Length: 233
Image 1: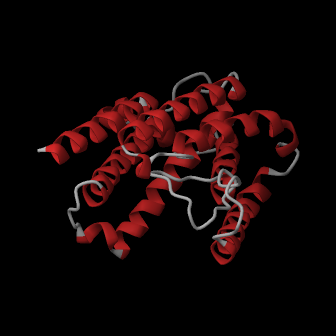
Image 2: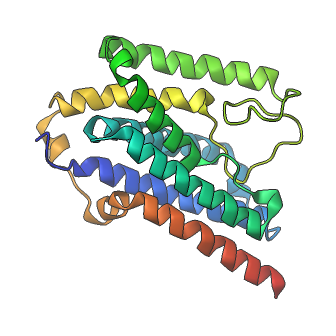
């Protein structure tokens, strides 16, 4: 089972990326087209957004347990993040993605690859406890102290009052979601989950989830292009 693709992970990731695309559509309609969408500002959206962000990031952490080279994979994903930055800068400087999900995932994979041996020395059951705590504490602290008077620390989670990004996933607090996923991935890899987990599959979503990176890369330019053309009409 260790060498077989676990399609439930692709399925969840596929559902998450589709939810993310829907959110981006609403975001673009609001900030590029001036269309007010009540659901976009509701509590329900905040809850759903957190759930799907958590699943997407955690599964990326889980998959680090099955990667031959997280550093190489991370460099590739980060490079695509830079491409997203350039594309969004070209279309609308105010909505430029300066440190979005691909930047974050790329750096997180690299850090996981660099410190995997150190992290693995901590009991995985303990990791499942400490990483959510660290996420919560860092999130609270960042909300208390931001904005600060330093502009170049935004990849870490510290930003000044002039900072903006069309998509923003700083290392703090989200890195702890990622490492939490890494801990969960250990138990999955060791076949500690129920048998149904390893055979569950929803073909459409697992197909989308298998090509998440390409779906993400393609949908962003398409959305920006459509919104840009419509705004000129």
